[in-house]
Image (cartoon, rainbow over all chains, first blue to last red; front, side):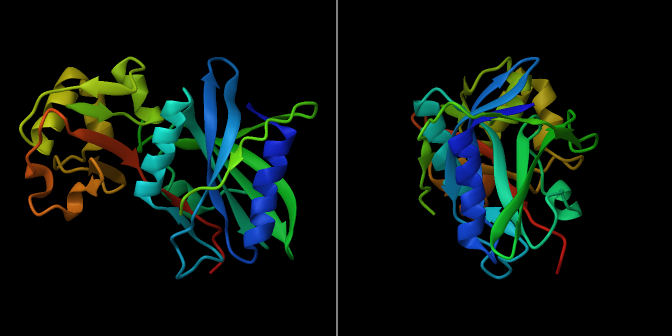
Length: 157
Length: 94
């Protein structure tokens, strides 16, 4: 299960609307809670380096990931997942998403954005112990409607 | 020197986010890392012993693939290595 506060949920969906018709992407910071799942406490927007095909591809520059990882470390948080949008495409992982997924244990959140409006948001946890046995597992999203964390930050793309 | 371990690989370092190793080169540091934590090896290297294509290794701020000496680049105790798997994807429509 993926847990996050309502404002963070709304923020990552809004990001997909802002970048439409291109894909957005970002990083989920928080803590993995054994036996429960990933608890997101902050989201960080990232730049999409796939400017050659931004409507159907995303890629986060490793150097930006390192900056975000340092930021997480300074706040005693971990990278627990990533998010991106599928403009005019279902909120389901694609073969490209699977082939490019390497963060075992992390959550991959996908929001479908239809005609500029965020529609569905799904999360898939990457399970397995290696590239050879990795697999996506549908995970439920628990949204805390009462809390607001105001922890969305602009990445330094 | 310090090696920063990404979230998915901490399973193999006993949960450690940062591991201290000695090593005169990037390669030497990675060998020591995988000697201490052997389960990391298959996640970092392919069968030919080369870094997997999706594994990025940065020496301080530099991607080692773009350093003149690459994995043979010399290191000092004050250096930091960061292992960071790539993150990419996208919907399948072309």
